[in-house]
Structures are given as structure tokens and as C-alpha cells.
Image (cartoon, rainbow, N blue to C red):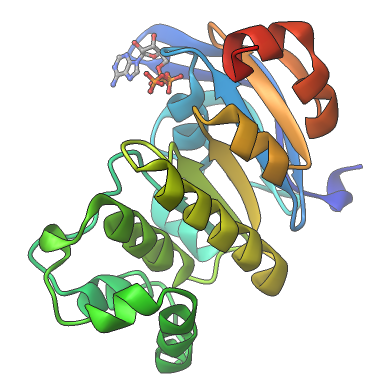
Length: 238
Ligand code: ATP
């Protein structure tokens, strides 16, 4: 029932102007669960994430820990425990690494930022080394780690990741997913990951959804999606 789900979408439709781009999506995420969203370009994956953090107009029901969030602002949704790492990362190029991390804690009222920053420097030693460097001069992989750290500084219960591996070298991508798995375990953060690298994402996820033209075409446990003939052909390449 509703109480068991951290996030629940029912019959969600999303609109850009008058154009409906999601056509009645049902999706759930349990506490601490990792869910992967696959789909071709234009299928509506980014729009789905934008719906959850209230950056696009929607109809239907969106519940976070049982509370309706459809009428809330992005700021309120962040305060309620949702954080997004947008495609292209969106770090503040002119600010230092540490100031970017601090910026991620803006919704917090407690004074524990220092403890958290130390924790994240331990997870990402590379960011600690580069704490005074401007974000704009980091490598792509470092910027992605910074964007993730910044998003986690609000201590979200739900992290939304839009194509985190985009443009990164395979070895960096594997490191990144290793760290996401650690974060998920140590911090009990649930995740919705939109990802082209379906094999890696399905390895990490408990469940998955395949979006096609704004609707859910397939959903199920990650292991079942991995064995699905059409998923294999379209997203796993064998
Ligand atoms: P990609 O992998 O290319 O990012 P996606 O699955 O994330 O694709 P969306 O970006 O969510 O897909 O786009 C879904 C549909 O909404 C597409 O038809 C797209 O053209 C349309 N769309 C996306 N953003 C806007 C916008 N700002 N205004 C109008 N239409 C948009």
C-alpha cells in the first residue's frame, strides 16, 4: 500500500505547454530501493524526473512518503527529501569544489555540514584534493562526483540521477557506480537512475522501467529485465 512506498506515481501525465509528453505513468520506489529507467531518446525519461521534482506541469497523483507533492514547489520537494543530479551536471563552474558542496546544503537547518563534507571527502578523495579548485576546471568524472555530492548534501531520501555516466570513460563510470552503491548502502538513499548504460544500471538496481513514447512499456525486477528479449536487443546489445 501507499505507506510502504517512498515514492508513488499514479497515472501521471506531464505537459510542455499543451503537449502531453507522459501519458499516464505508474511508478513506485520503496525506501532505499534503486530503480533504473531505460528508454530511447525522447521517451520521456528526463520529463519523468522533472515531474518528481516539480519542474514540469503534471496531472495525476504524486506521493512522497504518502504526502501529495503535485502542488508543491521544487524547493519544498527538496526540503521533503528529494534531490536531483541533472543531465550535464549543473555544477557552478566559477565556485570552488567546496563552495559547490556547501551550496548543496542550502535547505538544511542543522549545523552538521562540516561532518557531511568530511564524509564526502572520504568517499571522494579526489574532491578533497581539489577542494579549492574551481568546479569548471575539473574533469568530467570529477564534475559528476561533485554534482552527486552536492545533491547528497541536502541529505535526500530519494536521489534522482539523469544519465550520470554520460560522456565519462568506462573506468570512471564503473567507479561512479561503485560509489553510488556505497552511498545507497551506507546512507540508505533510494535512487531513480536514468541511464544509457543499461547493463551497469540493471546490475545495481532492484527494479526497472522501460519508457516508450511517454508510457511504461515494461516494468519488473532488474533480473527479469536483463533476461527480457526486447530489453536485451534494445539496451544491452546482444
Ligand atoms: P533524452 O534521452 O533525449 O534526454 P528523454 O527520454 O529524457 O530523452 P525527454 O527529454 O523527457 O526524453 O522528452 C520527452 C518528450 O518531451 C520529447 O518528445 C521531447 O521533444 C519533449 N520535450 C522535452 N523537453 C521539452 C520542452 N522543454 N518543451 C517542449 N517539449 C519538450
